[in-house]
Length: 227
Image (cartoon, helix red, strand yellow):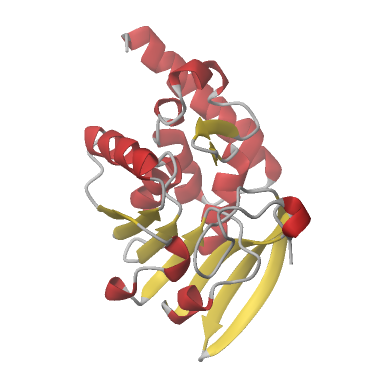
């Protein structure tokens, strides 16, 4: 990009953070800084780049989306990620949320079931010099038990219920945030593990693409088949 284009994108990111995120009450300075620093414009399809900073989700192809900036920031703030944390992300998608988490955590482990999306996300993250991310293709509803427990887990697709595999991979004092509900509408839910007790708190009405996997939806589920 030309220097003037880079500066224009930086200015657009600052406005996005000021108006859509800080302006709606999210005040965690580390989250705000990460959202301002990660070049969101590079994570959207080229034909959607003019809408990269708009207040809404955007299609990525393969039936997936990149979440609206406010939802990305809200979910990230809910996790309260610290610099020493190991984070599991279920649903790499474009890699945008991955890049935000990588700014905040020591290590990010991310799983994506769509190989084409994962390949593109890996290439982009590598080009940006993001070196603290490990990724693999697979069923995110089962987590990544080889590297458990995790301090934080973020699920960026909707499940009919909280996958038990993910709860089992959460470390003591850990947090998990996940959209839970039907295919068409869900509630963003925060799970905390405190003294061995699982505490579940509903936070925000949302609408995400479905989480497909052994402990989530089947690939052919549609809204009339919700259970």
